[in-house]
Image 1 (tube, rainbow, N blue to C red):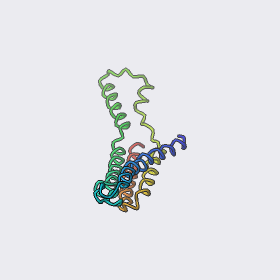
Image 2 (cartoon, helix red, strand yellow):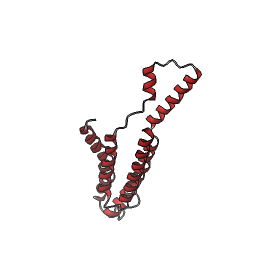
Image 3 (tube, rainbow, N blue to C red):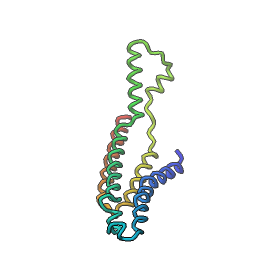
Image 4 (cartoon, rainbow, N blue to C red):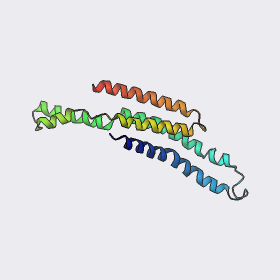
Length: 164
């Protein structure tokens, strides 16, 4: 796998999850704060940006989505589950005597899908950059990131042991 593609993917995911989120949430608030105080109902910049409907709740949601979606996608690897289903269907047809597969087709079905380690690095680096960007406003983010990395480590370790 080309590592230039990996770093471009990291950059694209980081920009989409961090910088674009920050810009979309902060720019309209800063624009509204440039109007006179009577029209903005007395809110100051910190309250408008970081308050109840501000960036902090959005960042908190992004961290929890990052934890659960990542661990969930690692647990339920759809390509592996599809491969298991195809193997089960093929074994059932072999036992019934209705299998019409050639030897090459059967080998392709019983071969496990490849594991791309470089794609795991995309997630890890993107999550580290995301955490570093928002660490100052949400210190608990480091704990969430460590929990995510521990979960991903053990899921990948168990999956690699089961596949060998």
